[in-house]
Image (cartoon, rainbow, N blue to C red; front, side):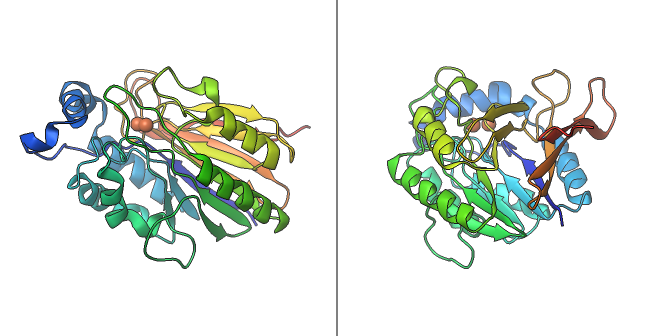
Length: 299
Ligand SMILES: [Fe+2]
Ligand SMILES: [Fe+2]
């Protein structure tokens, strides 16, 4: 039996609600200016609607949404994002991890938790959210890691931290022993060289080492707003690390066109097939841009 995951990320749901001036006296001021100057034209909610409609029509077994749901982490943005993403499905069907824009200020993540806590929970848990969380679905272990932390203005760095890394190491071991296909979801690309200065994961080196030591079958991330694929050697075999473009970016340039990924997994054979779906250059509807098999099939 195969399992179909749809992976989308970085919807940056707008428009930005009106923010009282006093609440702009922090990092949000630069974020709000950034939204009005650039983000509002790059991230289009009609594009996001089209992407989500196409994704839902494929009938995925589960949906991974890897962060940056909002723009400046202001409380009213989260219910707005919830209303927009409701069509994806309920919390049993959708797993979310926060991005740096969801953790924009110290008050942002608690506001996200109020609205999205059931999408970021261990199976059967309720109440406070602790990362990493673990959900088991059809031979898969879906593990959600939080890399979103408040940062200084103009920075978009992330950090997993020692405690989460220790819990993740145990979860990876436990789920490996159970013979599950381990899927790690994280907003920031976990490899050191995979993000520009000021945008990367601060503990990328430690995180990469953790993956190399304990293995995983797949890592899904967002943040860079473009498709990427890296293969990391690990103690349990090569780990594909797959980044997806923003789900709301207007078509038009290679770096700004919305996509999502469909990933069909056979947990028994460990075979994975990735399909990139999005808008091709020059307009038209959503179609499959590229497919990829891992490990590569030999004839
Ligand atoms: Fe983003
Ligand atoms: Fe991000």
